[in-house]
Length: 293
Image (cartoon, rainbow, N blue to C red; front, side, top):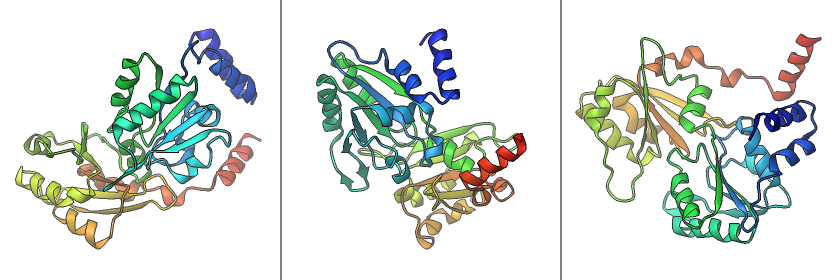
C-alpha cells in the first residue's frame, strides 16, 4: 500500500468514516480470476486485541474459516452475511484434516470469494499458516498474512509476566509440546539458555517437561506459571515451581487452552498483576473523556 493510500485510510478511520476506509482498503484486493485468501491471526482471545485489519476482514470477507482457539467473543463479531466454516482441532478431536483445510481454502478462492482464514494467536507461530500459504502459492492463489498477537506475548502480559526483564531474562524461547510422531526437544540446550521458556500445547506433556528440564540441569525451584484461558474474562493463573508443574496441572484441574511459562520473570507476576483490577471498557472511556475535558 502506498503512503498516500495509507494516509487516506488512517484519516478516514480517525474521522469514523468506516465505509470509506473499508472501500479504500478493499479496492485492489480481488484479482481478476480468483478470490483472495487472508491468513489472519486473531490474537489470544480478547477481541480488543484484534488488529484493525483483522476486524475489517471478519466483517467484510465472503467466507470465514476459523479454528477452535478463536474465542466466542471474537466469533460474535463475524459478519452476518459471511459463510462460516469451523475447522477446529482439539485434543483427540480433529474436525477436519489439514490437507482438507488446504483444499477448502483453494476451492473457495477459486470460486472468486474473499476468504478470511482465522487462527488463534499468530498464524505463523505454531499455527500451520505457512503450510496453508505454501498450498495456496502452489495453486497461484493470492494470499496475504495478517499478523496477530501470539499467546506467549498476550497471555504473559495479561498475567503480569514479562517475557524478558533486565537482570532476570535476556531472551525467550517458544516451544511446541505437540508433535505428529515423536517429540524431539533439545532439553539440555533449553536448560542452558537461561531464557523464559513458553510451552504451547503442553498440558498433556507437563510431567515430561518437568522431569526432562530438571534432568537437563534446570533448578527444580525455577518459577513456573500455568495460564488457563489467557486474555479472556475467565483467565486463571497458577504459579509454583518446576518440580510442582505436573502436580499443579492435576490438582488445579487446568484445562486447555493453557500455556506453560517457566523462568525467573514469573517472580514478578504478583507485583505486576493488573488484569483483575482493570475497569470495564465503558468506565475506561468515561475516565479518558473526563481527563480530556
